[in-house]
Image 1 (cartoon, rainbow, N blue to C red):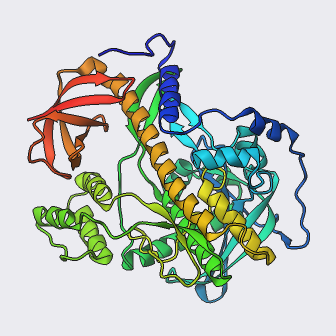
Image 2 (image 1 turned 45 degrees about the vertical axis):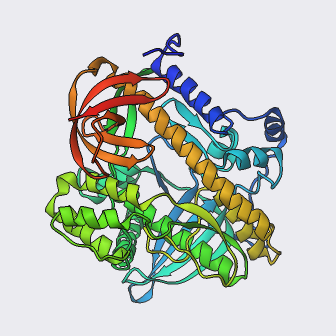
Image 3 (image 1 turned 135 degrees about the vertical axis):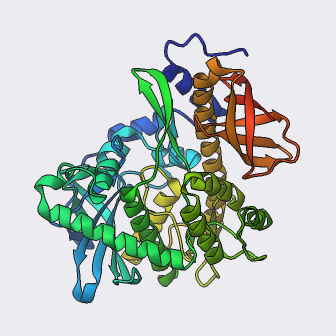
Length: 492
């Protein structure tokens, strides 16, 4: 098929141009306006220092654990042993609001996009790199202002109490998921700097044990064990060479569980201070009947009415019975659960909750460099900590909730379309070949399937009658369109 960007020199440039075009089509802005860049240039660098309402926690063994190539470090964590098997768990969140004032030019741009956009062609950050990877990033060996969530966690994984404060913190070690995971699993030697810092190693192990206990308790309550297959683009120079699975691991689980707990604590704190909040909710799945059918097809059973603990128990059984296909089942469940959304919650209101996390009180607060709802939550938290009134009224928060939900969906669609464009680049020489696949979407809008190898998604343009989410099918690749991110398949 035709192409509009074949004149570009490299596949990375081609994918970046596609990302820019689709962002504009989706109402996202790939570039920072002149007034935002002028504001950035005028920001005065002030060395953070403890003072009234700002604690000094720099001597704690704070560390970041993130992707190997992450430069926007939003959070640090540390764990300290407490009495009777309890653990004092602290999460420090970068204070982005210090340099990004509400309604400033930088804030207006961030509010339009609401999120950083991560694509194979490059990252389009919500805030300029000078902020998100430097001044407001919790970089190693730098003093930074942070909002600190402090929790006391019992041996059973239950958060017994929590408190929030502002503090000056210092990142003593930038760690990477893969190295920490291999070390925790006992695969190979300790990753630097764990090998040369016994105290750091001990508290990372304590964080891991605490996170595992928290995870087990959440699963008992119905938090879902899912293992979706994420992919990452592999380049040789600036040319796309492969799309490879990017599996979860124990270090990612560690951070995920700590962030869930910190987000719950932030939501509870705002509620306790009589503040409204932007909650992250996942409502009861509308297609529960299809989940019941999937369970029946696997020789199992789910109740007729939505029940998170029952779904989690089913997932645990299937993972044990068929680990090779568990990622396929997880993908089908994720599609049927639907998308999360942001919603205003007023004090005293019954929370909608998050079905997938089995959490009643849940907000987004731990990534203010790359998600606008987290920056809004940070401003609410800082006002509550200072005893000031809420900086946002209910009507404004309600409008922000709707806008952030829409823009997050638009950003997700951009990322998905660029992934498809990347996949089309790889698959173009393979038109006419047959692949094993699983149906990932089936509606009036069309039917989609994910190939097992390479793990990419395409649209079934013929032979889709009678297919539904979760069905396994053989497909033939009949066409690609890199610029539009189209991969056309025929079933049967």
